[in-house]
Image 1 (cartoon, rainbow, N blue to C red):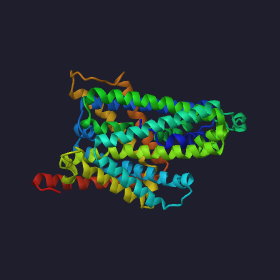
Image 2: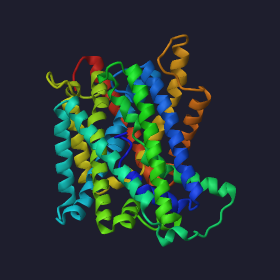
Image 3: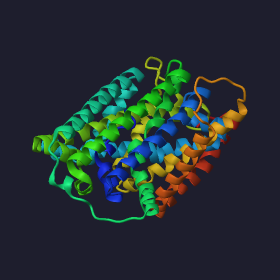
Image 4: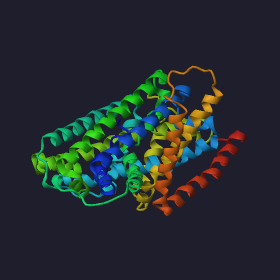
Length: 422
């Protein structure tokens, strides 16, 4: 839940309303996004039950396809998706800091400080990092619950009674809902990070599927309630004309103080998201190094804390570099495209493992396989294509990063074959 709930739920309801202005369609997109997330959680849960290895996605792709595919995943995770998401979260917090404190501080410098502090905390050990994540998760859920409470008892604004003009055929409306799904899936994304730490969990084949399904289910309920209260107080017209729907709902209940409270909520959510990413994703780079496909030092585990300290530090360093890189926003725009390409491969891995493990009993299986697994695979590919269709520049940079991964991979393979260390 900590990996899913971030700043997206406080901003994206308005973005979705601008695309599909009909209240029932707005709620329908969020319900559909939740259903896709549940299907994805089913896929990851079965993979975790069948292959409870350290590295999560990395291990699944390595065992199902080829080490090169797994290396590409870790490579893009480091250079695009996870590091870019961390940098964006830190800069988002820095952008709200002046609103909360009245102090003007350099956003890159403040983001650097936040990234550095959170990286150090997670280097202390999985328990310390996990405790920090749990604190932020509890606070975020409490903040969302407060927003829902405000929305249930606030007086609807005049905009709630205004009917938004617009016409669309049934097919046209479904096409718009498909476009809106990219925004919705950004808000729902993050559930896959739970699998990164499967090697450090007790009985991951049993506990990880349970945590995934309960966590995603809880997020779906919270997200739907947030959208219901936003539509109740603001209406679709008011929702589509604000970039801060949560603040507007709070303002309708207790005035300016409420709007400031929601600004604090958004800042809190970005910090919680940042904590989750620093805590989980470096385990992938550690697994790559353990396979001899990355710098050997990355695989070093601290003898006391038992965490891959250098891997965590590397992730933080790359995120800091992106924070000071003016062009990083272009990378963030196609993070979803990268994620869903690999989600599609994860669904294909379920078919491959079932064929290989024929007759093997596992603690969790995707319900109604192969239909649900195939459906998720097709949807994941569709979301990736929709994301890249919006920006050919983003697609070009993404595939350039993929292409660069191939020679880098074979350099590490050569080092491993000769017995040398990189």
